[in-house]
Length: 504
Image (tube, rainbow, N blue to C red; front, side, top):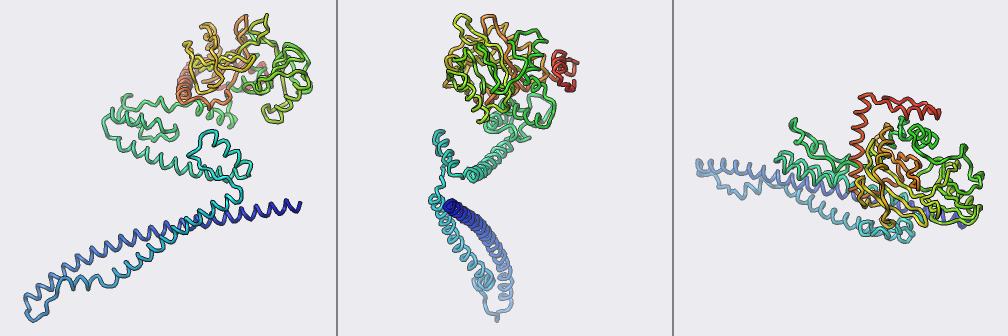
């Protein structure tokens, strides 16, 4: 204990010393800035006085020489003597003060550099990792952050990094906004070209109002804004709206009981599901089932029970050989926070091929109120692999799962129509609808209002889906104004005892 106390005291002393050095560094920097400003001000004042005395000297010199022409007995006074007389003491004082400030400026610069070097040295001696953020690749960055966490200095480094980023971003925003201002009165074609280039670098909240301002009633007078749409930003804003306890229809379907009631209302096929929920220690030992969390996303906490001695951990892509290992893995999910609540459900295990007992692959439709924008096909056995599709049947890259792609089989037009039809019955601009692909066709799996890791799409995909989201909002608003009732959705809420008021 004494040793631990000694170490803590030493660390505390080092921390206080570091804080003191930082404070001194900031103070010296402020003093340096003040002296620099005073130097500029003194130089400006000196030039003003010089101009003033020069002008005054010329006027007095003329008066004196005029008097000399009139009175021959008056001593001649030279221009040089007048100017010397006029400049006299004030100018000499300013020059002397400027010299002193210059010397003080040089001294402070040296002192600041010395303090910075001293701070780096003390951080190194204290075991603090110093990171040159701009010159690291991804692996080096992750390793450095891991080391900082181990050293216990993560908060300090995050605060420093955020401060630097804020300064960096502010400077760039100011420069980009001023560039937009410079072209505000240029011809429309030139202005739009400049503005489109600027939009590549601006986040949606950074776009200056001047770039979307119209000088006429013509639609073509404004710059096209497709580039600023963002699926990630849209979903993040939806999450904030939900935090405000606003009613979000898509999140009601996150409850699997409500989701199944809704699907039953629409007459779509779904797997059987046990009527009750279980804790991880009370899961029924039954073959041919899928065990998943009541509240979960992605494949976290999902297990396929082929047999009691052959259970697939979907998230970790490994096979468990007995029931005890299965229970231990579920307990680990809870401990690590992969699953938030110890509430699980059991549902029917469906096969892609009944004879070989190949588990059904997932088909996930990214739906935007009556329209499919993107499709993800997942093969989970013997390992998890992914394939992305457009609604037109083209394979695409999205920036996600790039090292786990395979050539999937795609979907039919009837399957696309099914997903689009279901989404048109939900009063929300976006929802992902997941199915299992079996020998008998698609079987409903679940809804996802917020797909996992939605921020990992590349910029092109994020922008494309963002525009789909905005267009879907427009279609939904039009239908609501025209009186669409969404009867199936309302019935599912009432049946599940979730009597929410739908404002339509």
